[in-house]
Image (tube, rainbow, N blue to C red):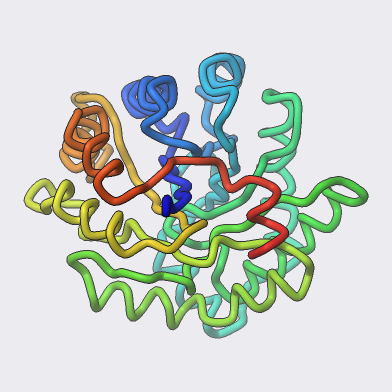
Amino acid sequence: MSRRLTLCADDFAQSPAISEGILELLERRRLSATSVFSLSPLWPALAGELAQRAPDADIGLHCNLTHPFDDSARPLGHWLLYSQLRLLSRPALRAMLLRQIDAFAEHFGRLPDYLDGHQHVHALPVVRDALLEAVALRWNGRARPYLRAPDRLGDSGDSPGKGMVLKALCAGFTGMARHRGLSTPGWFGGLYSLTAEADFPGLMRRWLQRCQDGGLIMCHPGLPAEDSSDPIGAARQQEYSYLASAAFEEDCQRNDIVLERFAQPLRLGS
């Protein structure tokens, strides 16, 4: 029996090479979702192209507090520490997230299908409260988005310690989301070291074997580029090469995996 999988490429609009790589994979149906940096200066020009080239994919907002698109960004360590100490301003965070939601909708013509977070910041304490408030404000009376749930991590790839920390930091996120009537994929994968030495094809094969029906795997593909500001550029190229290959298609068939959007029937049943 086939299993439905949402394969989501993060970081759309971070750079031209990343965005074009994602668009090519979406057109070939090697992905079923992508997450957008809506404050990127590239987003206004890319929004129409994304809508045209990926009409059958979930398009979501990659909530960002760390990548320096504006002066509100801070290093990940800042958010990790201050969220655990509950020293963050929820109203300020809500305003930041609303600005990103509005920037997405302004150029794409509608609200995002789902929300997740760059470096999983959306699921941290205090940030998650601000996120849920922002969703309630912007989706008032509308069909609500689904959320990526890092606490549903089902496989830690080559980084078991990183996986343990992530699940601990994001503990309780799924319960909060579902208490507000928001759906989350029940299984999450795609975590690994993001290094050039990592065996991404081997890890993907393992995730394809282990993922549950209706699960979500994140990925970070991109075309080759001379970009010294991107610390995972080599990993992006490796991911793109595998996802664009016949081997990936064969691995999906071998494991009875069907790439799909996290569609409404799944949301209601999750």
